[in-house]
Length: 143
Image 1 (cartoon, helix red, strand yellow):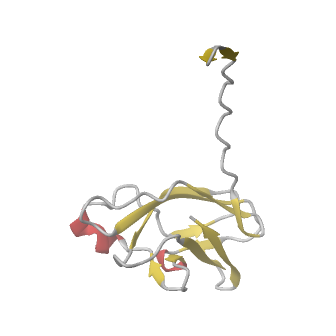
Image 2: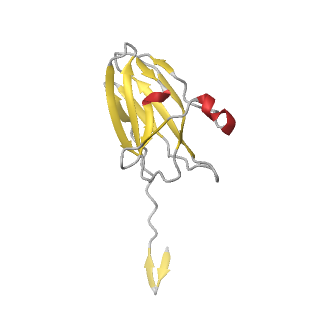
Image 3: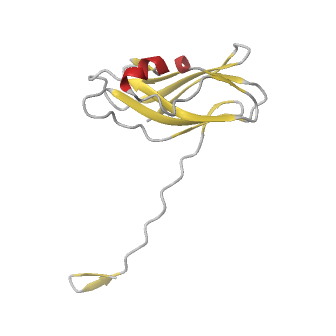
């Protein structure tokens, strides 16, 4: 109970934070996102935890070139390759490239280099292909 100017007010318990729902990438393929992590001081590399789950009938490719962040003007920053992160000592837990078969999921972290003048808010862009090289989807989500 909280007392304000002589009036008693019952404190309401705070509601639990909503659990983010997976985002649809294509037929049976979903993406779950963590929060975009701000770069450490003096760096312009941001990190994003992702989980891709394939419950569809087709295997899909997961490649770094399929993930990018964009600004409002459409400027893109591609996901960095592990070799590009070697000097930054940030490659732990990076999302592994490869084919994701039906019934599989994969989690990891993606890293993006953002120009210092890259205005927020960002969108995540995912260009997904099947293992047979057919375009499956192009999706955008605000971060």
